[in-house]
Image 1 (cartoon, helix red, strand yellow):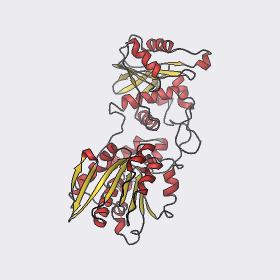
Image 2 (tube, rainbow, N blue to C red):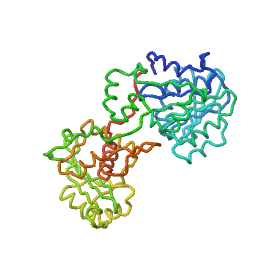
Image 3 (cartoon, rainbow, N blue to C red):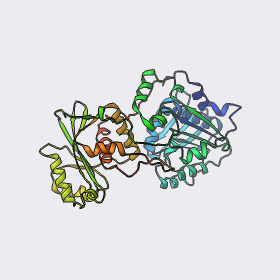
Image 4 (tube, one colour):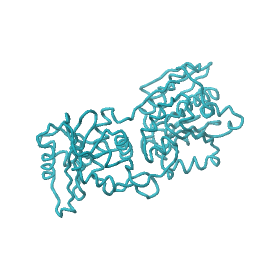
Length: 415
């Protein structure tokens, strides 16, 4: 791997432990914008520090999952080790690598901090240091258990993340208290990565909007507020005449007491149009419907079109079984990561890859009413006016994301 020059902040992230001003710090925290180069620089610095300071010890590389850790940190790191003078042996089946240099050899284990149960995976091991990639995505129990494993004299903690909400425990306990924790805090922007061209920076700026723009582009720990989709515009996203479509898919949010919302989507020239909808609110109508009655609504929505498949609310087990029992439509459970789904819908709206018929009146109404909760403690939309919004999110997260057309991708920038 060839390197261009590093920025001042990138150089500090790599070599802070050699700096007389900072080398007595117990930890380093790097946060800020996406694609600012903090992950690669921290991983290079972490290995260099470990191999210079220790011999025959164990270290941990941690990510949200081992798969994401390998993709986002380990694979780019392995491409740099040879240029840095290291040799390594990777044990894929055992989730570790042994790195050697000048007669020194240390072992680096891979751990995933997916949920609260992950803390048990790292218990019992003694570590000389830990690097936590995207620490804001990990549960506090896992992070604190990993920190507790670092009992070797001279051990240090390395953290990096993109910003989340300002009530996040890591922001409050570590970033705001970095001096108290004896930690070096470095905030990155895209300007701190000399490898990014102006065109690439502008592309990322176009990719995000609202709270996600403030977090991932400006690097701010910002609270979500207001409407969820401020980029939605009836002038831009609503059309009177739907073109002839070559593919059709239906997305479903299912409710018994709450409304059920089904959207019929048609594809034409790279754009998906929400052609028509089935929206049934039992409170408004005064009577509930059974699975079979909702299924008849689904058939009426489809008409005589060839529906590729139905993307259904994954919690609606009885309705999914009802669809399968009739044997007319293929049905798949939707992907249901709310925050990622909202981000993807926002991107699809900005890029014009989803449009809406003026006949989708309940969906259009919900776009103006769907808001973030103002309750402190995390990012969540209010559970109001969200039924058509959920079926739209199911469609975008499951169909556009699966096709690779949602704009979210992994890329390697030339260095």
